[in-house]
Image 1 (cartoon, rainbow over the protein chains, first blue to last red):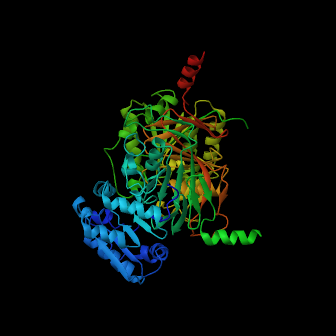
Image 2: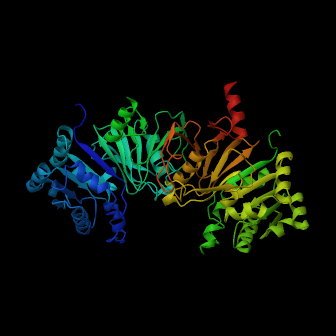
Length: 298
Length: 298
């Protein structure tokens, strides 16, 4: 198979198009998330403001408001070819016009909302297959996603898990996501919602996966399906369960608290990174940094 | 100096006498915390329901409600000699009658509230010196504390740090606590309030200290100033910074996100434990467990 040539940009959410909006909290004016650099980075990675970008609002239950917010936000930073795809049902995903649009764009951006809507609507469709093929073979093809849109990127996906009960076995629910990346589990809104316990449980039950906890206004740019670079204003928490020495999680009934000896945890800020395969923290992950570093060594 | 002969019982809070009450959320009926075992354990470690216990409400700004709740809760489990000490100012701590009570009791229990009230009112007083002496020299002397009362037990004490800003350098404020234990930093309400980032920052800036994150309705029974046994229904998260390989925290200005490579994290549930000095997770920490284990080995 080789390494995928495209890039993923997984974002932890912020003004939270999707779930907070779904709770009736509409932050129409809170677009500072977009002004602070992450959206700019998506546009830059897409080749500039002329790039054809498709915003996919499927995860959200209020797609029109969400779509409009993205149009405004991308518009603000000068983008010229932003389009919104309202795929609400599996039948929409099968429509030829939508499939053509997925073939023609440079970048797709999955909004927030409910990640189960993404996996259940796109799972097994030709559209998802096209996304996979393009991601594997086309340099410069970008799949971005925020909140639920980020969580659905991996093969192993958390779809439920209340922070206050996440220390109990069985309270963190896992299923199969869109599968652009294996061997990771991505969580979002990591700081504000107190999700350490839920990602730790997901890692304890799937120790071959690295947990990626994305803070608000924070993301990971993933190249070659392996190298992650932190972007945005917050932190990314990496949880590595490969060296767990003891855990009771296989031996206790559901509803009981779990225990783990020896998780490795890393905290990345902008410019730091992580190699998933090598399980290695990178103090300087951006291309520029690497070049600077080489020059200073010589 | 030798190991202290007394025991500490640090509890993460639950119905949160103190801070939630201070926000006007009075949970008069929510005493299940007390019925679920932790309070029973305090009484058991104190030698039974006849033990003289002094509840110290100093951390709280609504001491009378808090005191009454403790009287009710200890009363419910059959305690016969529960007393409440309303030490509001340093002058109260100096009063001979209060000093005599501290000398005469078997157990003190610090309520929740604001841990800075504890350190600023008791710091440097004869009463604190008596507590230290008794804890060091008297087998069976118990110092218990919940929420702020637990956080104040260590020498290095977090007194402020909003979860949503705890990934930024300088947002986690540290001072000196009551100092019953060195080389740890205790945090409370660990799961509900999303405090992983704040304890991680405290550990990154104080890497000789082990971070102890107590969940709600969860505590650590600490013997010999070193061995911890998890009690209660939730989890305790241990953060060990001794093996940090990289951190930017010394090099960035306040307000910037910090990064850390290689924290070790352990998650303890009831019966698990941890040796602070040896930095070692214990699958079975209770005395009974150890005996069972030895028997099964023979």
